[in-house]
Image 1 (tube, rainbow, N blue to C red):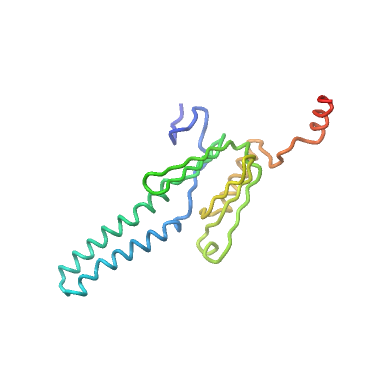
Image 2: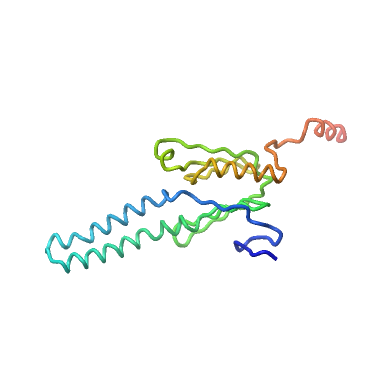
Length: 180
């Protein structure tokens, strides 16, 4: 029996690839954490002694880490897993909130991506939009969305899944003839 990569993995299921959002999603935590380090050096301006600077810097660094940690945890533990049977979106928000979206590959009708703006173009992230039978799934700030879209489309094609949600016209005509 192969190893399981995540808790809810079926016995007959294999993981094809895993992707996550771009690290740019942590930018707010990084900015606030760096501000905490900067603010930690302020006591040295009031009383210019080396000990005040070191203690203030140490306290600022610890507070900065505490501010940045939830952003990093949210990024690190939010993953998208594509298996040979389904797409699983695990989203971690903060320390105590996790949501899971589990969708069969056969429910996916269309996969598109969008890279809009200078920041997304320069840093290589964008949005993946999937149209499904149950609604649209939009994943923002994905690292290399063109590569992910290509992998998803190859996976769907390899498993015989087409983007056409309706059966061929002949099959519909036969079904209506049988019902009449």
